[in-house]
Image (cartoon, rainbow, N blue to C red; front, side, top):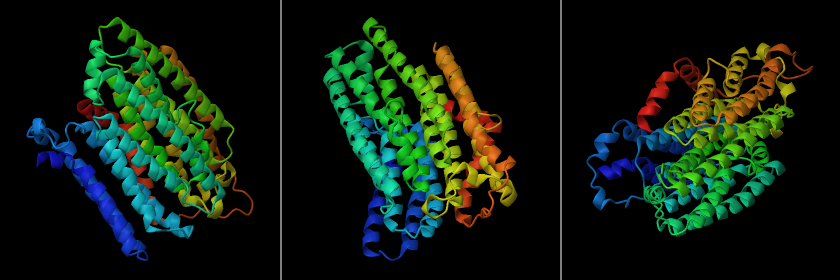
Amino acid sequence: MNELLLSSPIISVSILAIISLIFDAMNEKNKSFGFMFVQLSLVIGLVFSVLGLFNYYQLVDSVDWVNSYTQMSLNFTQTSYFFDVIFCLAAIFTLWASKPYLQREDLEETEYYNLLLYAVAGMMIIVHANHMITAFIGIETMSLTFYIMAGYFRFNKKSVEGAMKYFLLGSFATGFLIYGMAMIYGATGTFQFDTISAAIATGELNSTLYLNIGFGLLIVGLAFKMAVFPFHQWAPDVYTGSPTVVTAFMSTAGKAAAVIMFIMVSKTLLPNSEVEEIIANNANAQNLLAFLAAVTMLLGNITAVVQKNVKRMLAFSSVAHAGYLMMGIVANTSEGWKGAIFYITAYVFMQIGAFILLSIFEREKGKNLEFSDYSGLYKSNPAMAVIMAIFMLSLAGIPPFAGFFGKYLLFIATVKAGFTWLTLVAVVSSIISMYFYIGLIKHMWFNEANEGAEPFENKSPLASIPVYLSTAVIVVIGVLPFLLDDFIANII
């Protein structure tokens, strides 16, 4: 029974997603009912996730793992439940922002809300996976919903083009991922993460060559999901073409799921070992990941500098943030993983808040997305100008906001792991990013509004709720970082 309670976040969201789809087929016209049902489903998933997070030891200690229902294919950890909470919150924020956005575009359909549930179910499966096939099912469940959501504006050429690019390139990445898993199985004889790690640590492998090829293929597949160089090309076009609220969800919750998967894979395939060949392989893998992280940070930020469209700028900068997150994976220590978890948590709220704010001010056919469109925002809507400035400063890593402390933890962990040069690259990359983040602030606060421009009015009170909540989280974590830092240290 307690194992069912441990699985309750995944079970509840998955079953409710199926029920929601059936209700939609039976009651197509009642869009408000679909919205309310999905909202209730996410709240239920959130409640079960919180219960799992804070009653973890009580539930785990009473489970008969020998006769387990899940046969050890799922991993129940406090970190998993913590991200269940993050995914549910991100989905609820997206849900609240989506309703007024889709109504304005006259494209509100209940199936859109259903897709959010399926995406969250996939993400939950990923973070709870203790088996490569289980993780693969979660990744594909999440990815398939994203392919559909990216092309949701089916009469918009950019949306359809972005969705097709995402689908085709994502299909190739899936091939690399599954072949990599097959190679790891050939090298170790198992799909279980913990068993794979033990086999590698002791050097009891069928083939070191298969292991190296498998890890390389997994890096390709996961680098695509995170938008890491050189597999990042899809991200700017997909994020720009997708509905802004969809981009908010994909670039935050989706990236968080990919980061956790990458951490699980690196912890499994780069264990502490006394076998010389394994030690050498681990060092080579870390150097490769460090190179990818460095190029990703620089390329993402340098390309973002020349963008004139705010949405596209945030899309390119999200590539750079994937590079920062890779630093925690490169470190391959508990401090590195803690830094990555802290930073992705902060990133979810500052990025989703910024994109939702864009969706509030966006007008039909992608209007009001240029830097110049935000000139003089402080006069027409000073509150939103302040909030957007907070998001930009946090993304740039300027204190006293959450982004600063997240980068600090990653930098410290990377230096301690012996990758001081990578930290220097990250510092330079952060300095470059200030140009476009502070550039937007300059437009809002120091430039006069364009002649004949309509004043920015917030006509979406429902969408404003996640913006205010995200701002509060960023400020609280930035001012009191030890609250989240200590909490993460206790659960990893």
